[in-house]
Length: 418
Image 1 (tube, one colour):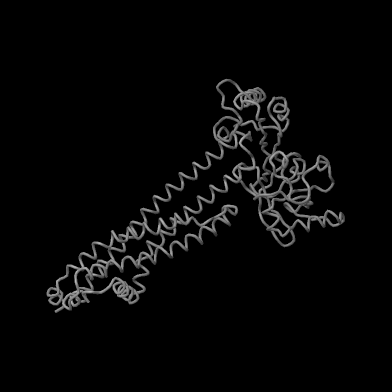
Image 2 (tube, one colour):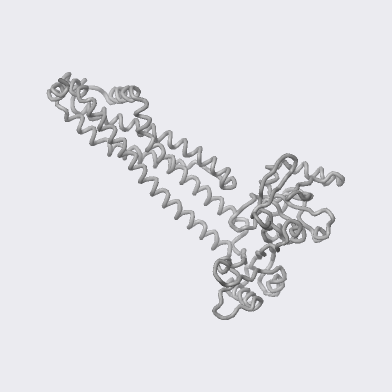
């Protein structure tokens, strides 16, 4: 007994754990949940940050967005919305190209609109867009075509679908191509029970942080069929590389202020943002949220390990006679010390492993469903770091019960039993 190898010690610890499966499971729940939260939070925020970068990547650093100042709308001042006619002001400024505009179609009681195809129904965002929207935002149709000027006067209103929504409805590129060839059999979807012909599929998901993405795209004339309220217009355009960003944006701001007849000192009715600034702001926000949640998860992990220590201390008290007999048979204090420490390590290692697997699975499910199919990739260095931190914390927390166990006197243990 005095010369037990470390493998035998872990075998004895594993046997002790198997004798009390329910108590071990309840003891490890705190550590398991904490590790699960750590992995889920990190992978989700990392995947979301990656998705944000991808959303802004196709826009380019010189993309500028002008939108209504919603902060002014929250105050007492009346907000004057942007108008499609103001595109003429932007076209008159040198250094601006590829001007497009869009706006979300909002029914009276909801921000999303019911979309139906065959037996499938879902609610999705609908954007009214300009003719050059897909070209200006580098979202060329992957199937079919974009919007034409003639679509404004078409007897049968037409729409474009996002790739995500088309896949969910079962509308494939081949099906759309066949419908185009057979003009008598168009592919029809229903928005609020009104028929619209699908003429194209645009790449991307139905939502992004710029607001340009939607599940369904249609013309501003067709938008009037769904809602009498004119969509809030947003402008997006590109700056030429040979012009000064500050000079051009100053001209844009001055022209819009004059158009709105904004008084000196009055809050502007619009906000001018560029894609790079929006990307950095979004990444910083995600990183801040990640850090706060990780700190909370690490604190809960420490509390979970403290709970394990409390249970191990109680177990040591209950096994006083067992340790006393081992000492009487010649077991050294180091053997008992490592036996108790091994039990702590094995329990927390099992809890950490289960927590890692659950966290990875939960991150994939949430990332695919709630975050518009955000790409979740296993970060091996982070997983190994969490596992190593959990084991080190387990060793630190397991020292106290192990010291108390190895100090048990064989004589006192027998007296206590009698």
